[in-house]
Image (cartoon, rainbow over the protein chains, first blue to last red):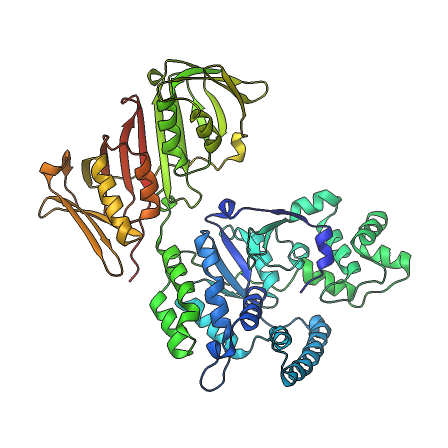
Length: 327
Length: 247
């Protein structure tokens, strides 16, 4: 999730798709898929994406609707999947699970009361990425020849690392502001929204506030991250001033008489996260459209009409070559 | 330094052949030629244009580079009648282009050339088939194909010595064959490539029906279309990347 307060510090500007043509984007797969999953569940009837044995695969509808955007703008996505959950994040995950349980109770109430709009809203909020959703999305991407990378831990840490170190990767793609703390040089936000994406620039952010990477992470920790709740009374501006005055997290905490549990380990999660160089990406995508369509509509019994337009758009965009292939 | 007088038709013809692909472009103002090279944002279609100094009533330049908004400049050129002369003068200080048409003076703010998409490298292609054809025949083929499909296949049949055009729609098909006696020239070689009609339609708009168009074609390769403008004082090359047929 990350802390949205970081937006106040981030150097962000809208960037037209035309400027991104031909780029490779390491996309935080969880972040991307979840967005399309919830949108599908909220706006599409469950019968469209439920198999005869009752398994829900709204992810397949969502993914087919979301993918054309990349291809039509000449972007090659590399989907980066989460590996294990970081231990320190357990609290955050437990919180979210509790909240989801609360929503699920409310959802049952809404259904009983016959409030369809409220039920659809809550249904979207109670989605989780089931093992079936993970497996079927990966298989769909395989059929479409879309590169995928398995992160050892957090997907967005791996995406940020690839953007920083791999010449073949031009941008990280995530709505999560944590990409900034993870040192992703350039992150594209709102790839799942209509309109043009936002480009979040790491170096420009550091320069604007005269910070080092470590100091930026310290500012983030003071405001709160997925791994710690943040210090009461510390928003971005206060945290920035405090780091400016005292230099780093430890001196700020000492001066304020505060404490952050596992502060040093949280810092390391951003500065030296568990990532890998052990991956292969082939950005030359040649999708097997018919096989992918059969997988979605025959094997997983998704209503053909729900994905027809998406597959057509992928087909049309993927078959067009660029002149740069010959230069 | 840049100062020139040019007929409205020549200026319009020049701008039109670029604006079908891009909204903004860089214009090189060399001492004997004005030249433009641009590629569309998807890198599918490219234009490479030269207009000799002799195409102008008068022309003075010393190697400058300007960036322009093409539709704005086209609108201004559209204020002139066909035969009217347009006077252009670059103000180096203010980076504005002063345009005069029979007493009407328009000052056009230029665009920073660095903010315009980089000029493309020209693909180095040695294409096996060469076809010289009248602009009106291209127009006929493109118009017919557009009635049935979004794509158009262009090829050369080396066995029967023919240039052919195919378009297959959901229900209707279009087929056109042109033998050497219906063409200006045919140098046959293995060629068959599929192209997006969106692009070819736009390029077709800029090709005069009376022009002699030289096509270079290959097998799933980009096509090159060459033709003259401004009484052969200008030359345009279009390049268009093919669609690769997926199984």
